[in-house]
Image (tube, rainbow over all chains, first blue to last red; front, top):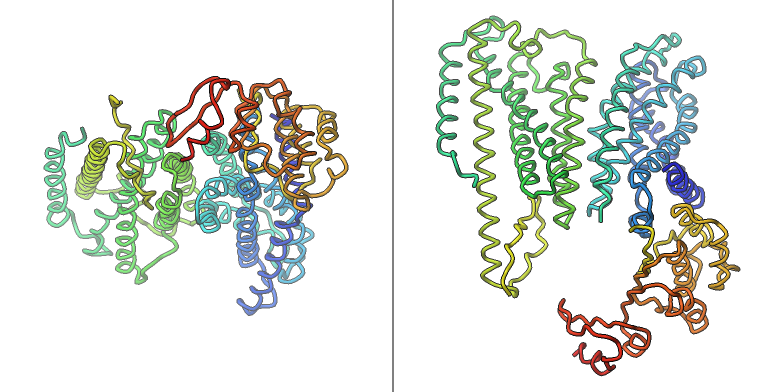
Amino acid sequence: MRRTVAALLRKDVLLELRTKETVPAMALFAVTTFVVFHFGLNRGSVSGDLAAGVFWVTLLFAAMLGINRLFVAEREQGGFDAFLLAPADRTALLVAKTAALFAFLSVLELVAVPAFALLLLQPSVWPALPALVGVLALANAGVAVVGTLASALAIQTRARDLIAPLLALPLLIPVVLAAAKASTPLLLAAGPGTIAARWPLILGLYDLVFALTAYAVFDFLLED
Amino acid sequence: MYGKGLRALSLATTVVLTGAFALVFFYAPNDADQGFIQKIFYVHVPMAIVALCGFIAGGVMAIAHLRTRAQKWDMRSYVAIHLSLILGVGVLVTGSIWAKASWGHWWVWNEPTLVSFLIIFLLYACYQPLRFSIEDPERQARYASVFAIIAGAFVPLNFLAVRLAQAYTHPRVLGTTGGSLPGDMRLTFLVALAGMVLLFVTLWKYEMTSKHAAMQLRALRRKLAGDEAPVRAAGRSAAPAATLHARPDTH
Amino acid sequence: MRGRVGLLGHEPLLYRDLTGRENLDYQARLFGVDGARVEELLERTGMARRADEPLRTLSRGMVQRLAVCRTVLHDPALLLLDEPLANLDPAAVEAVEPLIGRGAGRTRVVTSHDPGAGLREADLVLGLRGGRAVIAAGAQEVTEADVRALYR
């Protein structure tokens, strides 16, 4: 199983490095959205809960781009069939795709966080960085699992670019909610405060529930 | 097969619902601050409870479908979810009316249950479009079941998250149902709840019966027409495909 | 059962943006096959020189050859081939014959629209018309004319 996941992940990373389709688009979208927010909100800087909100909503929508593209190569170039022919555990595909999406999101955030700090954030982001990274990791995990599920569900439908976000967005509202609440104290103008413990816990619970659910149902999506 | 007991069920539903309405109008007291409009609570809350249970039941039936591959479970799951969705519209509308009457706005963000419900509603609103856009009937049923399970798992999680996000600023009766309700209100509420449950079950049975009958009719037509019957055109239907397996023919 | 079947259909089931070698290495890892086998197959199908170019730059015939490599990579006992020699020039046909042809020593199920070639190769013939089996016999008993009659 581990070998299969490694093979799949390696292939996906290779494809992304070769085509550079997904991650640059996500990063560019995020930065552009920050600029749009500046004009939309008519403010030079944000802090506190407004900052958290702008940041997380932008990340969420940028993630949608990644989610839409996740299974496209499999669908259009026969990747599903090639995988199904192999004597491999099918859940490996779920794990590999989730890991790939997690990786893409992390790269996205490597660009988005500095861009956000530069363009819109009033307090400095440095002192809050370790805590923020923790929140990002938990949130990424949730987005990655749910995104993979939604993408897998949508890929076989006719209107796949519409269905995937429609499925993923409501499911991800708790993630946005918890992540924003968690990061609000980190982005205060007066300097970072401490996070209320309940929000990372909620994120963790969410990740756990969906990881287990995904593990249970994914096989059923691949039968053919 | 499903028609059994339908008449008795309908009768029971009518009786209980009428009883509930009577209680609401004549028995339950007028709320001290909100006045008469508070009575919409007796419609709104039972509807919400039943809708949520309906969604979760849809998820459980979907699990049964995936385990047994019996098409009937898929049908049951579909009907449960789609009825709950309709009830969900009712919940949002009654909630909105109540909000307007009590707080002057058509929508309030600080009522966690209403907000959670909106999110759930938006999610399940994708169920039919999802089914609608997968043509292969077997795959459509399978994917719909996967969705129903995911969404069902999501319901409690969502309520937890949203509730935690709101400070308890509103002394809504909702949060302490059964606990802090005075006796006469509690009775009315329970009767209303029972009525709503019966309504759901009756409608569910009705729809199952009608769909089942339609399926049998189609299967019979196919048998009569023999092999030259035109294959049912890949209908763009959100409903589970009617593929009752015909009994083996004697060629 | 999975892992003992090789499938060659109309789609090569390879990623267009990866090179031949990358595609086959990926498949090898999925099937638990040693990397040396990839090199061996690339040599035998004459694709070793162009194995490091992305598939979308290759001609249809070359892609088909790589698809053949993919099909036999894991040394399957059963081959399912749908018009395997389509898009192949005679040199390529010669190159892949020992892998997927009669000389390959595997059980093969081949669909073909070339009655002559098909009959030469087959032990058993199954002819379908309208979803029903019209011919099901040993290859010796079936003539080319019988097969052509199916199409009328």
